[in-house]
Length: 273
Length: 323
Image 1 (tube, each protein chain N blue to C red):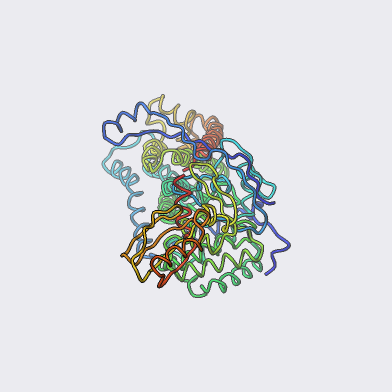
Image 2 (image 1 turned 45 degrees about the vertical axis):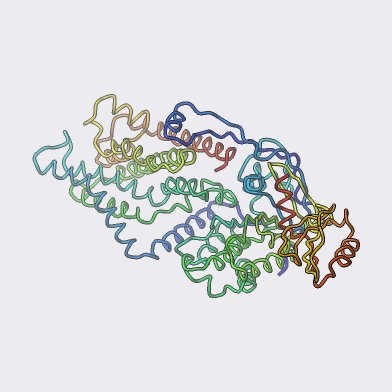
């Protein structure tokens, strides 16, 4: 074999990045499929856990109580969107969080640094989480069932919804960056997930049930309302107050998280594992 | 010259946590920082096609140096130029040219066959199909792992896995490969195979930098040895020079027909007196010449049998480490 004319691989365009991501998903699925029973049981458990929130909502309405101003299926639609948003982000990029924590703890984070790719791309690619596909499945079911029980939205509402749903993924990405950044310096601490859940859950209810201060916080400080309520209310034709501000804040949130992640990564670079 | 390191320094800040509960609790609030000078200014250069061994006791600064050279860590100060890149500045471009095998950290994926992990690397490095297949087949044959690469990694023996780690690290045709204790925990046969592989790849022009505690690796692979201790470079020369570093010492094992004479003489150190007729000793031939020593023993006790050996490299290293 000739080693004379050396070609250098690595780096590359968008298509290349997508191809890499697909390969990462393929590998991760292969890993999970190695234990088929475990794979299906994990997805099932995930579904049961995820069904808990909507189940409470269902019981509340069945017992005559309600979230003021929202029918049961409207409330469930918000939760469906919330689940859908996580159903896409958790398997496809939010795995960067546990992947970082685990790798930094084991010392295998270094292995990502010797690849000719951005480290962020590497933790996402190697962090695909197939059991979180259960969230996606649950989200699709809940979303479809709720949608079937309300007047079907028109095209314009769908377009607005799609745009805002995309922004919800942007916010999730921001959260992923913050938690992953914490995982770099805060060794072996899976508590970061608890931090995330305890605040993210504000996004699965209509904002008007909260106090004014909370509403301001979840729309214009940390845009948690974007994770479910804002896109869903758009689809329901009852746009939330402060939607535009929330969109702007979401984008700022993304950049701030990116800066935070980079700062944490730099600390790793200069201090080592 | 493809690697040039100048006055490389790395200082860590570490926190003292204490070992009792009380101290640990206290350290939650008040942390004593301690500066650890892991690397205190080392310089060397390496040419294309060299096979250099890095030796040093645990905590000597080998791994830190290796981390800087692979672009994982920023140094505190100093200059590094490898293939025209500064590893920590041009990391992404730079690492496309290098490979690394860590004996203690696996790049394979535990639950799936190595072949799937190779495919992930193919995507990461964007290796074209034809090139990928050519290199894969070549290395699989060389390491004799045709059947192994299709079995789930968790079912492989350590030796089989290590061979696959090498393939993983070299699929993208790196010019320089860093090996961090690549033969740790392997049996003799697996070690042999891996050493053969390294030598073959080296013959094809790949530069290797190897850290190890296995002196067999050093003796069989490295033509040049760099010894690091306490963050400083204390030796940089050929393996032959390393062996003669501590003078022309020989290990002598002797048995005689009549009781041995007194051995308290300059340049002789008795290591093991087995009986009146048998002894193992270390002779420094630069102090007492070999022929004079033999004459002396022979005339007093008549030599029955005698073996002469170079001082084993372990002894040399042990002495270097304790300096």
